[in-house]
Image (cartoon, rainbow, N blue to C red; front, side, top):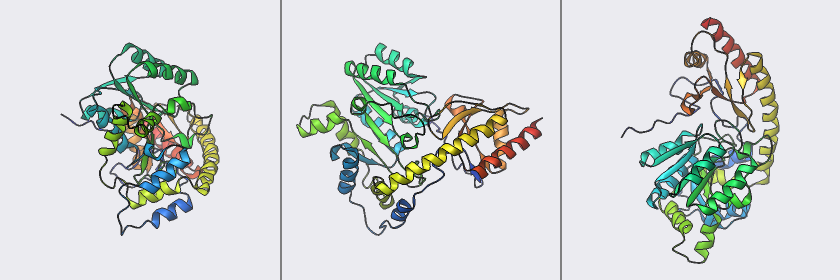
Length: 364
């Protein structure tokens, strides 16, 4: 079997990137206190392999039972582990958004599971209502790469579908902390029925610290309290936990997550969103002057279609990369001719505009 190759933004094995618009990481991070905590992490000792204090701290912040908090080495590791656990519990079908994060499909392909792509909420609901087999259903809210949200009506309809079908919901929450527009549309009743993946390292500018956590569905904790070994949610939770390697989090990962609920950390995040909103506005205006078509988004990244001039887009992006500026080619998302761009500081924005004009001139 040929492994599924997943493309990502950020470093690509080439020279250092001077202005990186290809990654969704918050360019303002990290917050000083979180950075200090990560730097001061005790690397001379193992962390608690059960992460009891950390799980209790995060559980208290979310207002849930500590049993529901399962540390992960970021969302990508969580996707692989949850998909494997679902397969071991008898699930053979996976639903994934397209365009969407490639790791959902890659994890399913590695286990030879059947993958069903869906383009929007209506397509997903129609597919789920037509299917009868148990399935793992991935949702990303807000979505990567579009930055868009599914409407409230979808979530209400999904709640009804889940109550009538053998479905395991998994919601990727990586970019909810970076939401600039509107409110989280996921109703608490749906969130409580789902596995939720959190990876705050992106929102806080520390992607090199691989740290995150899963929140198991509420009924998994209820079943555990009742010692109901037959409950499917409890069985899946136990499987996900048992598949974790020993010390899935490093000392630095523990420090990052431990700093997450701190009021100073959350104040920094709120302030960073205000700055990012300003950068989004100026960057969109600059790209508009180039004639780029830009999609709407509720987060500081979005899809854009550059004006085609001469060379095709991949060649133009290669020339741009040679000037130290990187955009995320959206071809791997099924969107040839489009790029995903993240909001960057004004100096980087000007560098992108200048570099693109040079590339466009060379292509004519």
